[in-house]
Length: 279
Image (cartoon, rainbow, N blue to C red):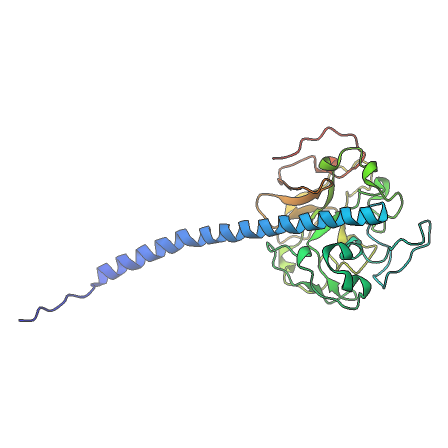
């Protein structure tokens, strides 16, 4: 006599489905955390490469890059109150291209394309801006106090371009470049992002961050996580919940928590402040 095999009942099926749903509920946040950690690690590596490029530029030009004064063109030479061999077109992001293995784009700015080292995986933005002449986006911004701190609010701050010797606060205490705050609703935009412009454009606030008041001692500088609000002028931040990533003058990368109230002390290269570096 053949025995009939009993199948799943409705109750058993519901229990199995509930267990699967429970396991998926546990799995999704874990996967998200893994992705976030991977994005944070990649962003740290990006900033390390940018920091090394700053030092490479300094070795070759005996000063740090600044934010430029004109749109990028072929090795334009600047003669106004500067050495004849200084390249000053494009932003800092254009000026350091030869030091991040992008010499062809530096020599021919018409060869525009995305630059992986300038893009934070935590935002997953398009690599190119299609307006303002077109060019690579950057999720990272220059500390415009690095050069003439008294004129930090000026996007083409060319005066007093600083050398390593001039960072008397210590390179480990001074931010060179880091995450700037961006509106999350504009992550997917290819044009007209608030306070963010492609690196081929020199002399604009869209590739720098500085204090609101332009004073030598920046007070009220914001450190904000990306949200659906437009960034405030001079605001730093980032997409990660822990804080904003910054490349320091000594080549290290540090995470600055959003709770930090003294970020301005890490922006001035000669402020002579007693700083407390976050862990």
